[in-house]
Amino acid sequence: MTDSFIGKSEAAAIASETSHEGKPIWSGIGALASSVFGLVMAEFLPASVLTPMANDLSVSLGAAGQAVTATAVVGAFAAILVPVLTRAWNRRAVLLSLLALLCLSNLMTATAGSLTSLLTARLFLGIALGGFWSMAAATAMRLVPMAVLGRAMALVFTGVTVATVSAAPVGAYIGELLSWRAAFWLAGVVSLLALVSVAATIPSLPPTGKSDLAGLAEVTRRRGVRAALIGVLLIVSGHFAAFTYIRPVLEQVTRLDVPTISLTLLVFGGAGFAGNVAGGLLTSRDPKLSVTAGAAGMTVAMALLVLLGSSPAIAIAALALWGAAFATLPVGFQAWVATETEDKAELGGGVLTATFQVAIASGAVLGGLLVDRLGLLSAQAYCAVAALAGFALLIGLQRRPGGRRPTPSPCAAA
Image (cartoon, rainbow, N blue to C red; front, side, top):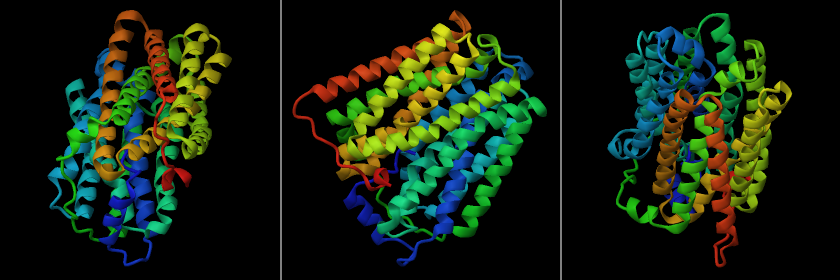
């Protein structure tokens, strides 16, 4: 995901080797969007079916939540290593291989009989997720001319937004109507359709041979990049510590029934649309504004949920604020790192993708430990503290004199 803002010089190099001969392949962009939808859907499903999944596999909620951790840990390594290890491969073949792993992961999850088999399935998802996100933007650059790249990336990111809105409520509904396994069978069908769409629409894309790790250490030493990565580790880990265990909170603290939980999760996802719009507007001025606003909104939302979460009205309102606030973060973080690494943007994007996955994994691990030992709302309390710490970090950076004002990216402007 975080590879979507690439520096101008790097973009021009990729565009010069494009296979579309100046004609945009919008069907291929649509295939990328459908693939992104399938990946994000599979990633988010465990949060909506965690209780029945844990019961069926006879494990604790904290242990079942490590399905998120397994995906994130592997995704962190895959984001950096897949483009490098497959540099000699045709990029179309790499995308198809990653989507095949996604299909396999959903099949194995739907038929898992133990926690071990579940975690193995989610490891395959991590490879698919990290690898695909590290290559998605570069692939889009080879499908459309640079003049319409912003529009193309906006279409690709529609898959993320739709999955964010629909995955959790649909998963909760299908899990209650049929079973949690049925939700992953549905995800498997979606991933298979994505694979077919990529095979049918994306042409052969010979490797460019530009991916390497030579500049990785130099990129991570940059002060602005380090600050962004620390912000990701704080805020995103807090989000996933809380979000992984949101269904048990709504069941046991707010005491909502399953249909109302589905509706509440739909409100959470729907609020993400507003957050995406707000994040784009703020990012066009300064990416740090988007991240700061998201961190502040998450802090307030988590405080409401911890202190007043037994009230259904307040809990639903808190989730709406939470959904909108979190949606401002990815675009802000991506643009922030891109402006700091314009000369080595692919490496910057890979590092950011990996950091996101580390944050997801650490959040899920810590959330599981807190839930099992201190109770459900401890994960939400940690999210509030982490978001507040990230907010303080960003305020400190903005007050520091001599900071460089980021240049808006074409994708952010779109």
